[in-house]
Image (tube, rainbow, N blue to C red; front, side, top):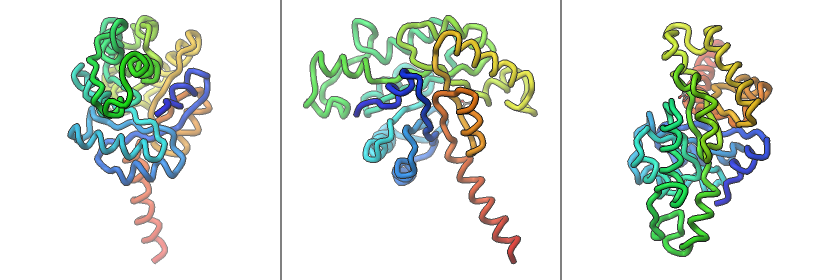
Length: 254
Ligand code: 3PY
């Protein structure tokens, strides 16, 4: 699968996708038929077995959604997600240049990195693709995203995004606000908003695309207006809002 999302982002275009943290190939298909361009399968907080992950990726491919896996910060998770067929790896809590370098090492094959190769896996079409063409295509195709979500990562932003191979920085507003000490107010706190808008400017100056989450259509619109290249809509928030709305509006009419 060609990674159209990576190509668009590197061309300066904007993409809207979905962020899903539970197992449902059916919802993945619905997301594809609804016009989303990518899916982030959240294996940091979600409950997925490797087989679940593979079936979610398979469903995404069937509806032309670029499958990206948010792994937990454990290098072996990166290999597993790539061998299931992930076309993007999103890594939380990347705080230093060294951590960003380790991410790139785990995603890319030698000589750039240290990803282990096997041509019997899904991404290599069980051996149909092999050798240098497959290895080079994977290195080229996989989108590498690091999450910026702590004050340490904010301080180190420029050195993190300058690591060769890092394609995009993704702001995690929830964790950032908690790490900044704003457990009550969350990401709405003016100090958090100030840091986020400074990050936007710092990213713009260095020509690095930014991604983040949105919980509603208003959020998507705002992010796109603010220049966010990669907007990941949280499916759970949209569903919970829709469910609540249906019940509340339904009750009002009786
Ligand atoms: C955050 O907001 O902290 C995230 O990680 C986005 O999912």
